[in-house]
Length: 311
Length: 297
Image 1 (cartoon, rainbow over the protein chains, first blue to last red):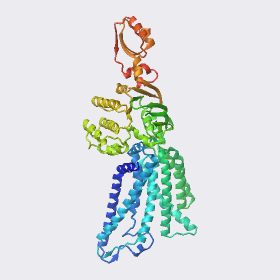
Image 2: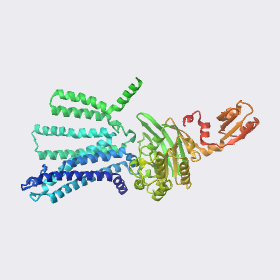
Image 3: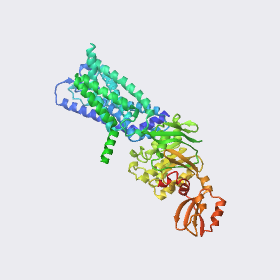
Image 4: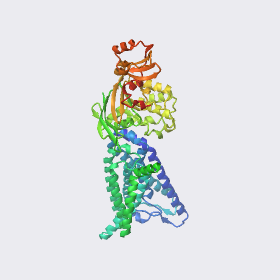
């Protein structure tokens, strides 16, 4: 039974996995080519990877990144597309009457999606190192060490899974692709604000964290958040009823909670980072108005069209 | 072996679309589901198939609830004609999906039927005409070899020849009593000679469940030419007027008895002959006033 479901999900999404994998390798290749081009113009003898790679710290320089920034985006994109395409292409209809329980479908799809993302990340990293290995000029040394690599991979992977989970969950509850993209891009960008808040909270409590500790904290938070979102998604997925496909929220019962969370989140984020009362009030008013329009806009627009057609 | 729909209800945006629908369906039956556009035929199918989560009720196959014993879903085939995933695939790729879900899926017959209907296996589903898509949907249903096959407006867009071919295949499929069909249509002529039972949906509810054999056994369609233009009392009391043209009347008498026959002959009509009774006639006679059938077409 499980084998059949694996086969079905694989058959359905193998093109997507291939596309993201191919794109990822292409981005890695272009990054490496840029670095190689820069190096070929320099004649000084040096190491591409500094001694810092021997420390249990995240290694990331302009010339060599142990975990490329692109990989965060690859995970982000996979989480988004994997859940959204099945809704938009009406594959959910087939899955929901396929004889597999929805819970099994959910976990299988999640497992395969995360597995594919990890394979893409591993291949991209191997590809990047492999090209450096064979293409670096003779004057440039290339020596890697486990401490820096393992730290970078573990931290990068944890944060990537967090991004995957955010998009995966958002695509599960949001039924409009454009609105979903705006929502997750907005939320992902707002996380830099959250990072500032967390950093300053630790600073104010006298537990100032260095950059490595902060990266680990962030990785830990990402993993915990991902776990919560995955489990919450597993609860919601069997309750997904497809008549709401095309509406902003696929679960109408979430409308009010989402509205409250949005207003509180935006107000708090702005109030903390701006640190003045006026900004907080403005952020509150804007989020109240925008959130209301965003969540209830179909009926607002319908009423507007109705009034316009009457006049 | 039976499929039973028990008190199934579904509301969408606060509006009741199907309300307390119950019926039984056994292999060997071809059931027609009729009702006006928007009455909830497709919503009933979608709710039965777990696309929509029902507000109340359940679908039971061999005493096992489909919502709880998911594997039983494989005994029921339904392909949503409006929302399906086929658009991104070529016809030759489709068995790869359906073959996984329906263990008895007949790939060889699928290929043969594509060839029989001059459908190119390499064609993308989305590039097919509306009629060709409908044909592919029916071919997938037939080759799935599921026990219960739900076809939503299957003849929509098909030409007469293909329609007859499909109807013949459907009848052949049920001959060995191993499969049953539930076919929705808003055009009763499509179901004529095909269905042996008809369910009528009206205002979200299942208002009638007709066994056509029983109805046909007692009903007659008569053409009469009377000597004057007055409609006799016997017709007013027992018949439903289908057509009037001068002194020529076409009527359906749903409960035709010897007594009525004698009364009609006593009128000494110029002509009294029996006409073939269609499904449409039956529904006009039975339901003209209380089903809104006159608005079906």
